[in-house]
Image 1 (cartoon, rainbow, N blue to C red):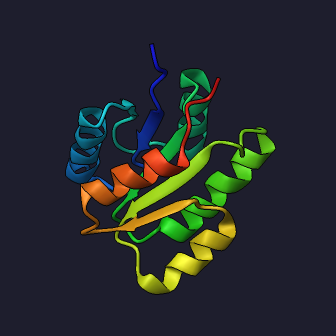
Image 2 (image 1 turned 60 degrees about the horizontal axis):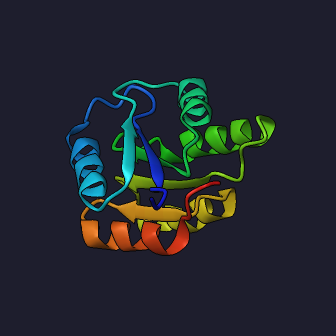
Length: 133
């Protein structure tokens, strides 16, 4: 039996818009991935603890609030502290093009602004993420 890619979908901070995250989670499930959805209003520590407990291959952040830069910076620093910076991080939501290079320099692996087709996200994960042993 082939091991499936495990994806954690997280909604950090006070952002209460979760419809997109739920639809993405379903699209990833339909594509054969295991998806853990954390629900709304997660702290960075909660996201990291869930990622560790669930043994995920990738953390996907859904951020509609415009706070993607400070949230991603804090997440990446905490992941390094916890020695889990080998887990890939992707982010989607309201992300201006000017912020994409900044997120890439932080170590965010995949960036998917609003309107990105599900097929593009799924293909990216299939090409770049392998299940952890």
